[in-house]
Image (cartoon, rainbow, N blue to C red):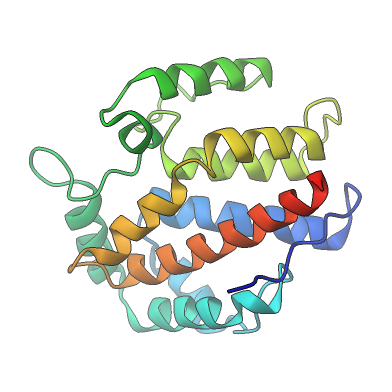
Length: 208
């Protein structure tokens, strides 16, 4: 199955800002369940695919439809069942788990090293470690839309994506999709998986 690649544009270009906003939206949805205000935004959102390519139209429409159908209470219950609960979560949302088989392993140390090189540090009040899916997506948003051109540029995006997202996010999404309790987050996982495929192809073309 082929994908329609992202066409990388100069910093500040509308398409790049939309790409950054999409990363930010995904980061927000993976971090915590949507509240009523956010769900209301989706109830009036257009179902047209993001500018990243028509390949995403179906997954985007499915995600919007699922978010329109849920409630804050149902979303919170599903998010808690999948990613929290007593003992270990049903689905781990951390890169180290998929790359090393356990939490807080070498992949997290390598990620922290690269984040420090970018001048980024974890918020002391954050509950999640830096290898949480939401953190990685938010870093990509910053690398696309940030003002520091020495850090926020296409090469840094490529390096970070290749090393810290492409290596495990697909497997994570498949784990969410396969879980019997996943509904809203299954739709989110499908869209995230397909968006990652589009981004991967775009970086492949860049390197060709």
